[in-house]
Image (tube, rainbow, N blue to C red; front, top):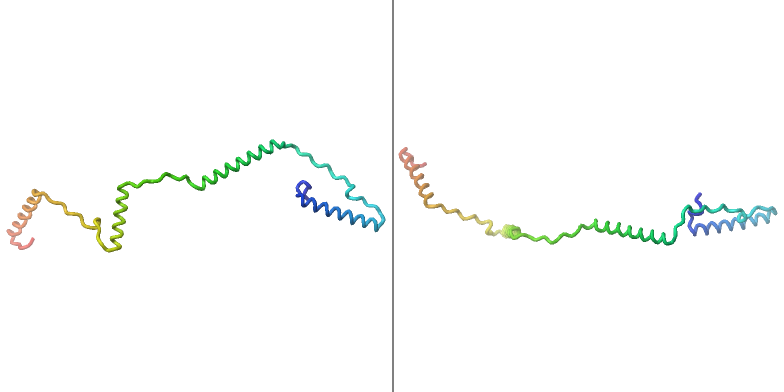
Length: 154
């Protein structure tokens, strides 16, 4: 059974109403029987247990403020951890931007079916005159050797 300290005001009022009804019914029963029964209100209630501590109103206010401050700190921490800090705006380099533009143009050219500058073959490198002369001499020597052997093809 719960103690009276643990009951709410509504429950205590309901308990008082029930006890009053019980007393009224006992009084009616006594009048019918003619005998005497002790009335519940006359029975002494045990002394309430004293608290081991006493909190002043100033201390209560101080405690409430400290708890509110702690609660605010917890909420601030929870809110800050859910959203990461916003970083500064990032800047794209000129080379990076050029690469993105080239890739975009190539993608659109592929979709449209036209060639872009990137898709065209690179220009052939030019050979110096000395290298050309050297290659010509090697080729003439190879043909002369093939003709001497009686071949008509290499």
